[in-house]
Length: 336
Image 1 (cartoon, rainbow, N blue to C red):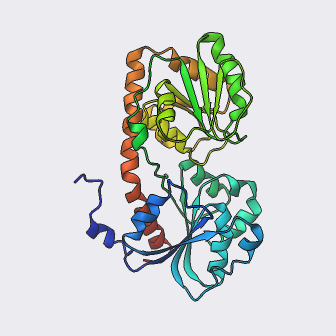
Image 2: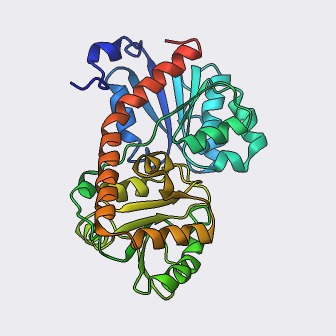
Image 3: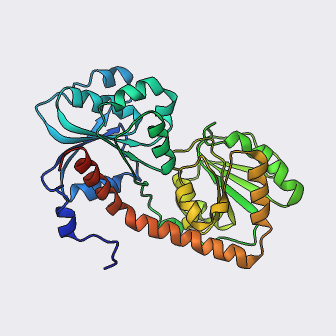
């Protein structure tokens, strides 16, 4: 067993075995990358998963939680579940409240967020970016970082085409993800690398332009694997992305990642090469793409292998990290 791994006795020693936990997630959840957190916690604690309605009226009057059940800890997974967790704390349905930050939503409503966070005992941030965001709102209690856990098995089997000038982006069409920047970025890149091409893979269509192939939603499977195997580089030009699971998926596939400093997954990209993290600036992003596409094959192979290794090692450790975060948060907040 590696030194970083924890034994069952060590985990039991965290004081999780007698814990009664309410895990709050939105209808249709939890997110696939958050399910392993629940599974790992359920091995040591009694976990009830409560689905919070998306309908705002039903969320404000949550009769579904006003029962005789009492919990030692409520975990609000995402900003939309936080008001319900706050209400549970106020109604003394839970002794302590933890909040998992999964989006920049709390920064859009700073006054509301600051008021809700007063009753939060500790925060699990999905990246150092989100940790900084909650601290900027004046939260002065425990904040621990724990990245989500995607299933990388399909991606780990992919071998990229490192000599290719093809770049990939995966994600929905949103301002926060910087999708609208892609056409201008590619105009700049193609001035230096004429055969550069960008695959845009996502749930919504954007208007294509020269050098951009818009593919729409592509589910996990053979077609997605084939598309990624044709590429050498992954681009994520986010203005604010709490984490960015697609970045890690691309890394597991061996693509060389280029992300902005406002992408939460930069925590992992820095371990590949800090210079692959760039400002949210069209020239800076374009220049880095040109630099990577122009590297010799040996340099690309080194970065590709490192990206795969970082993604796979991180995925294996994160279940354990989540349990440590819960135990540490409880200890600091006076529980456990």
